[in-house]
Amino acid sequence: MKRLDRRALFATGAAAALLAATGAGLAQHPQRGGTLRLAVPREDDLMSRVARGAVYNQLTEVAPDGVLRGELATGWRSDDAARLWSLDIRSDVAFHDGRLLSGADVVASLEAHAVRGDLHLEALDDIFLSPEGAVVLSLREGNPHLPYRLADTGLVIVPEGAVAMPLASSVGSGLYEVERAREQHHFRAARRAHHFKGEQAGWFDAIELIVIPDSAVRAEALRDGFVDVATLPLPDGLRGRGSFRFHPSEGDMALAAAPHVMLPHRVSSRAPLDDHRIAERWWMA
Image (cartoon, rainbow, N blue to C red):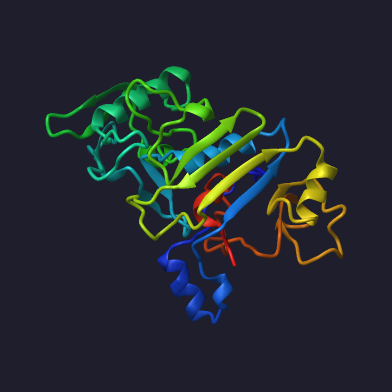
């Protein structure tokens, strides 16, 4: 299991129902508000992953229980050989610059991913729009797992002619819009007032990522309340200094969080934390 590529925590209406059924306290229910400040090292790619998850959407995503669901795609179907796939695209999505999402944006994004090798589909033959406006992927060999492949964290959708990164000029359709960014230094994005995910995700008002190269300084910043979450290799300096949460565990630690930061509960034993969804699925008590 990768240390920092973990799937499927939840912060949805289903989460609230489950927590209520188990008698969990109010603090464990997702709540809106606050700015999440996360300290990361310069050499780690966590900053770009969390920022990408906040700013962009993909065609599909893996739900907390491990079930595939649509994000920008509302549905998908294939022929019997799973070689020709047709995806229906949402009509209620706007990019941060005001442009409406179209099938042409999806085609252009997937073609760019395929050129760069991000799509990981050696058997990809063609991508085009059907007369009905659906995005069609033609494969040389059948692949029944294609919708799961489209949930890959790197396969983000951007406006036609745009690129996914650099952070400072990112234009996506995600819950958070970039306010300021400087590669390998800092990143801040604010939650959009209107989004197709509504009240199902994105509990923070804003998210800030701050590069602090030294792990001891990151631990000190967390301990003293200057940040809420820190990437730390060991819990040194935090033991006995408060009810810090160590994720995924103190023995296999990747992130440490202050007591007021709520890490969503795991639902599926097959799919732990997807850390690029922090902006959508974590919240503050």
